[in-house]
Image: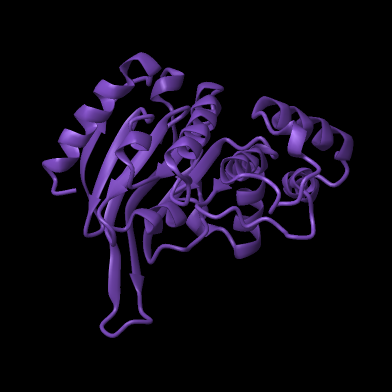
Length: 256
């Protein structure tokens, strides 16, 4: 089995029902999904289709009602809350639409915090790793700034740095450009493309076809079901326009 064929994350018959509503709301209806090691997988679908619920369920942030989630063969649904939290901290990274940074810490310290929590005895290594990330994503010059003193694009690049601070095997992104203009969105997608090219597996939820076109593969959800998949192959800037047009045409046929 080659690295490209190796499955790093998978769900089997995944269901999620919210019993707080009357009647209960079933959001995921038995999803089987495999994510290849090093793949950039994009999750799309109309509002309410279950995109974010799927991401939270396969990342262990939310427990599914039924089915299983395997990360490198380990069943996340069998873990205790404490064990699942440790797995998320040490092997996963997260980027959300909002940064969720601490107001009383500067950019660098916000990024450093999870790395220190994961390995408090390895402070020097964590600092060196974070400083390298700040340089890599072009925000070293604002590392001492407060979170309200940088642009939205810089803040999301800082979020990506924080997500990578513990060297995760999978990075999850939920609408990472949803609150940004087109220029800042391109900044963030360039950064995520760089993460993917470096070998990290990326799973991203988005409603934006231009962002989705960066992925290797797009899956489409409808009413909590995985109804179709589109293989895009490796992204290149030269083919960006064609990929976006092809993907948008595919999405239109689904009523997106």
